[in-house]
Image 1 (cartoon, rainbow, N blue to C red):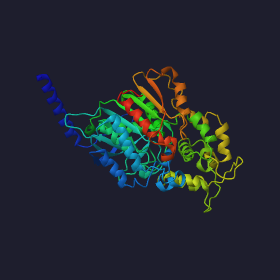
Image 2: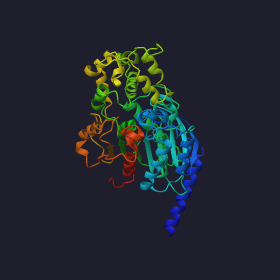
Image 3: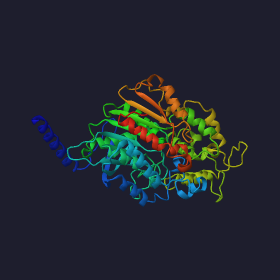
Image 4: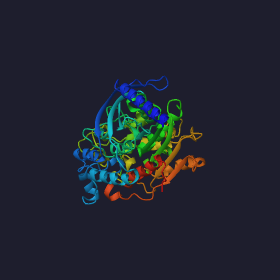
Length: 483
């Protein structure tokens, strides 16, 4: 008994000391191998209940917004009603309440959380930002771990994780971040380059840039004593583009094991197979594909990164055929990909394109119809060591350089077979690449049902699967049975 009392006193003294140190502000997280500079760390919000978080969603317009069109939704109730019908659509507020109910069945009680916005520099980028969700702990408690939550694709800057006023979020990242934080995880949510405070070109599905900037925010949190995270294991979880970013960050961290200790990686419905499944989608997706924005974002990100590929330049790869105001289509499209416009607005412009390669059609017939004959030819035929297909292969995950899977890291992949945005074949490609590890430290889970969300009330099967896939990820994180 005496030993136990002394141990508790020692823990209390340590906690108080860390609190005092935390009051001194953020520390620099620079290292020679992975330089990171902290600009500021600011508390921006505090919530004691999940209902307070949902109230913030509703106050920001949750009754008039819906699942982001970057997940195959429609961004606003008005836009959704044009296709889904007003009676079938669920608002952001509605879905948030459903998420709360389903989550409580698995995780139970909600503890309070605090939000911190972090501004930093890393990976060659300035003006990066992100959100840290810190659990409200009693003075003798410590976080159970660090959770890097890499969010799905978002194109509207106002939806960035670090933007809390107004509390808009078409991918429910802040809501899920709050729920994970309530489980006593320090939840680290990078905005990604091109979002939050950063106005550069978003590196869409580019593993080094997404991996390095996401890992940098983890490093900052681990170095800041107010978060008590320096000695904690790191878990990584992401959905859609976030699943790609999760695997990309795991790839980045596996080369730096002296700096990062990864425990679990949870990848949900991600576009990992860029050189296979996603390339095929670029070439063959039809006019009813729910998220056509992805192709110009790939082109913009890759042209910004691989500037030696001349035909990847936006004005060379996207058609210039004029739209109604006589402005070149490629110029207008590039202009509205700067974070000021939601996915619905971008898609509506894409649908007005006059194809250069008609393929038997005189109007939009799928994402590829907005690209030039030159780009289509190079995508189909340029397999040189410096061409587009080699670059897609370089960024395919897991790549050819993943010669082994670290047995100390547990991986979970979840995907819905009828996903209409990010094809299930992406996860099948991972399964084929890592077949020797399935059943050991790699688990592949097939989602069998999206209920209570559906394509008719969320916009797409991809959007509808987000809730159940997060719940499976939650169970994996907590070492619970997945069935």
